[in-house]
Length: 119
Image (cartoon, rainbow, N blue to C red; front, side, top):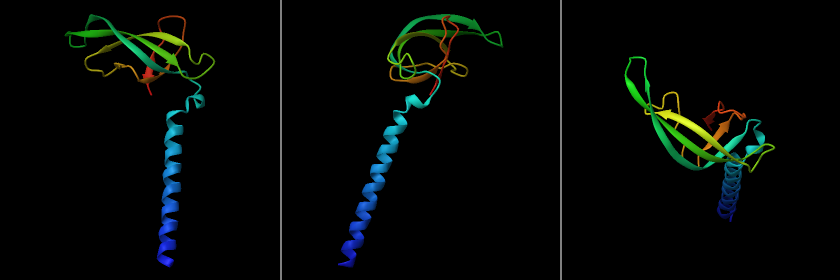
């Protein structure tokens, strides 16, 4: 009888732990309202073109241009679609290539000088 009671307590504790872990995971993926900076989820990407630039060692390398469509996930403009221009190089050292489904922090502005960073 005592073994059965201990087993039952273990099952209850493991179930509660699994439920708590599930709730914490769900919360961490849907906590957009806790951020002051706007977060956008990319819903479409389009390769616009390629430019050439010259590096520090006078070598030429390509810079790729992307047109991204994203939906704002928080803030006053939540649900609004925005179009983002992004440039990245092959090295991805100082730039980032984005794909549909990525979530990014944005710096919103009326000009084309705004940028985003990976979340």
